[in-house]
Image 1 (cartoon, rainbow, N blue to C red):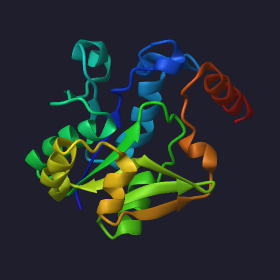
Image 2 (image 1 turned 90 degrees about the horizontal axis):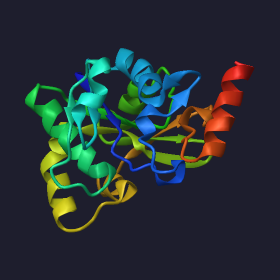
Image 3 (image 1 turned 90 degrees about the vertical axis):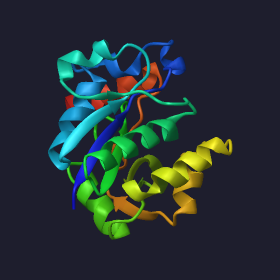
Length: 192
């Protein structure tokens, strides 16, 4: 199995005052670095899905994949699937840039839950579809799905019978969408 990884960093950060969430500091380091450090050991190659000037990510040394037609996270997934497929990967593991506490076994648990098929993370009774595993064979169907005007991540996952990989720590998927979420994350880090 060849798994590639993708950090979804295309959001506009409206609830963070329009700030590029990838560079919001948590414990003195940008969120994108936290996510990269957690996801990189689990995959063969890692890239970032982001629009705008890719040079802002140069310090990470990762490829930056822009959306062909920005329609939300699934546009990033599509760019990632095409990148991974061209390199001979079997599947793509995705995670949003604002999830700094990702589990160290995210990729293998997603793979096992779906037996290599589509799978999404679940913790604390909530599904986290942007933390998912997407076989590269889904690229063309995803392209058609987006072209039809559909853009819901869970809708596409359900279309492909996504398995759910259960995780015990609900904080592992804590999304830092607003300043109060960032304060909670800082508190969690202090508690260790």
